[in-house]
Length: 285
Image 1 (tube, rainbow, N blue to C red):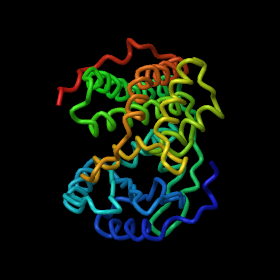
Image 2 (image 1 turned 135 degrees about the horizontal axis):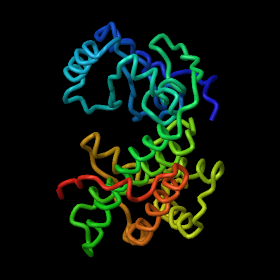
Image 3 (image 1 turned 120 degrees about the horizontal axis):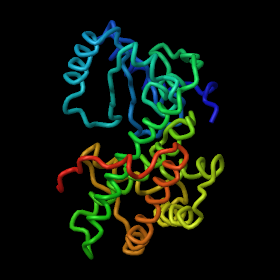
């Protein structure tokens, strides 16, 4: 999506300016939906602070922690810190944190970065970033499968969150595998539409499972993906959406095949294999 002509959100810019005053010499960049005026009233303010060196990065992280600790009101402010060298090195990777900020972010005064990649990332870099996202996706897939063994999930909000994060990170892996610069959105349905129109999923049975999953959890207005609400609610310590028994039945039926298909497709595109994903599994909670 071409976002160059979109005017950044004034409230997001105001937050970026406020944070910028307190974390100099780090350079604050406003990213995410508020940088391109694609936000909702409750959308996060996504910031990245680019520090001159490791020492400044450590101080910036501590300042941001103190500024944002305990704040869960709307809009929620997400901020991360990166060194200038790390930003320069990873920005060519379109689905890295730096890559997204460089392509879609704005400075606190509303200026676009005008970023142009200085080089093409090496295949091994793309493969490593894809594996980074897919390891997390696979961990969420495993946890969701574990929770779905129960006839009635004792914590449906937790199950919904695991599924949502699994879908999100699978899509991140898909986009990373093609070094696709598409702005990451939390709404899985929109990401699916993009992935299908640009690079159709080759496993048609798996593609149908993903489509069925998203169809079953479409919002009442026919837009968006209701699963998104689970991760949003968790991050804000708010009430999670309620899915109907029919929706939950569709979720339980579709999730294993859907996540397996997305992960397999991203692995195939990056040249990685399932053997690249094993990791220390998270403790059951």
